[in-house]
Image (cartoon, rainbow, N blue to C red; front, top):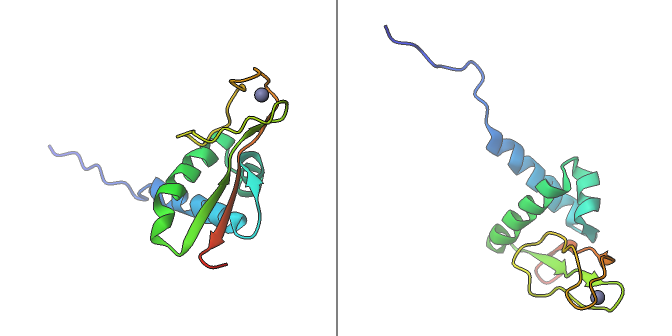
Length: 113
Ligand SMILES: [Zn+2]
């Protein structure tokens, strides 16, 4: 006996992700937002937003667009978190241990704009 495992409606998670990425790209064109701001605009969690931003950062060079990243900065001593491979918000300033961190900001600009 052969069991048929054919779903009536195939679930395609990739499509949903593409849609959220498109929404993120759309909200970032012409405005600068933190992950929290993006999260509020597209209805995804901040954690999800960071994941999508990392993907956008890797793939955006194929398009005539660029993802502008304003690095996070310590509000107390002004330390800038420039050398971060991951985009998510740092917890503490390595210089003064302050947790008052200005979040990383994102924006998308077209080439030559
Ligand atoms: Zn600091």
